[in-house]
Amino acid sequence: MEKSIPQEKSSPIVVGLDIGTTKICVIVGRRSKNGKIEVLGIGKAESAGVTRGMVSNIDKTVQGINQAVEVAGSQSNVEIRIVNVGIAGQHIKSLQHRGLITRRDLNTEIGRKDIDKLIEDMYNLVMPPGEEIIHVLPQEFTVDNEPGIKDPIGMSGVRLEANFHIISGQVTAIKNIVKCVTKGQLESQELILEPLASSEAVLSDEEKEAGVVLVDIGGGTTDVAIFHEGIIRHTAVIPFGGNSITEDIREGCSVMRNIAEQLKVRFGSALADENKENEIVCVPGLRGREPKEISVKNLAYIIQARIEEIIEHVYYEIKSSGYEKKLIAGIVITGGGAQLKHLSQLVEYVTGLDCRIGYPTEHLAKNEVLPKGIYEELQSPTFATGIGLLIKGIQKMEYDTITLTQPEAKVQKAKYTDERRFGLLGKILETGKKFIKDDIKDEDFLK
Image (tube, rainbow, N blue to C red; front, side, top):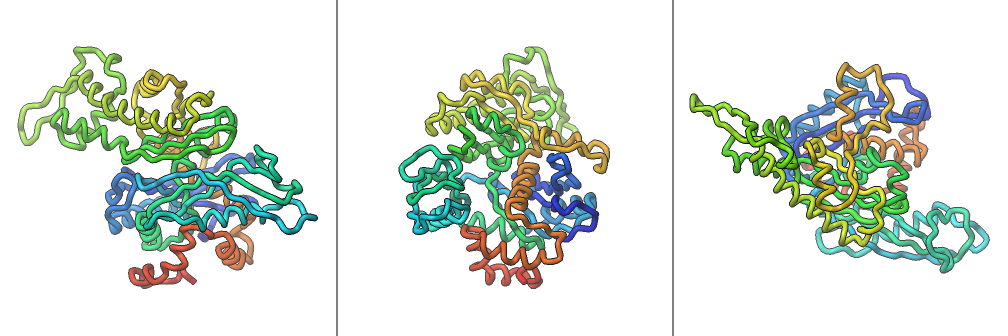
């Protein structure tokens, strides 16, 4: 990614790419002097090639990515080349595993390389055919049979063990995402699970420590992430979202899909009892036919039935994680579906847990550069995943101490790429060069 506006060396520009079921969103930003996230540009496009979080039409998805990149690039005055991509879909699975290494050098302290060795070993686990590991997330460590250690760096010890939360996905689904990105003349820096990204945008450290469930209701999927004692404990992707509600309205009210979406957004409610019996919405008829009258209360009954089903799935994930009684901070709902009226009340009623709507505002720096209204729009739960991808990308850049403004950036980038990619993205980019070259004549991004 080449930049063309001045910036501090300590704050490289990073791009988050959220390929969602209803929209494709590109957000360009960096960390401001006060530590918050400064958004420099945002681009949105309709997502016509994604179904339930998975790419179903590559050409349409590439077209959407290009439109969003063009808008975000011109708004931020940045040439976008490298992006942090979100991944979701019902193919995502998670499991717990334990690993250990025996250190030979007894005179030195446990360092980052020991933890990296443990993580690298986890990426070599044998998975079912067609599945590969996306993320390996360390939980508690054990040093010489001393359990419950969160950060063992600097300690002395011979036997280093750790519990890991491992997230896997289908190779073909992830290859399709990488293919769309590379066809759009972009390079994937990181593949990031979308609920992990959303959690960075809307959850506080105190909530993660106390125990909290993040529920991100998107268009095609509902993502779940459970945290306790600051550590991620469980992740899941439920194959229902806002589009399922729209389809129910379309069938239940016998209206066109675009009308169903408008009814949901403007008059929808998750609690039917909160609506009056005599409230009626008039929908224009087709080709000169009589207008159609729809009861707002009936509309709410349709929405409530589907929302209850989604919440029951979420509650099942909470119970199966084993942390149902340890969630002091309750549930935080975000994503486009979180804007539905009376949603938090219904969630509290079904689960018995406290609930709030998560807005990505606390991480955003006030920005006078963006056009009027865009900063206000960014504070919507709809952009939680995109802002979260941006935050994760910035954290990764800071962790690896790579600054794209330095003259030796290309050398650092090459070294960084060789050293860090143990996982699936590395395998796709290394072994998949032929599959990329077959489709794209311009191979500059591989050099």
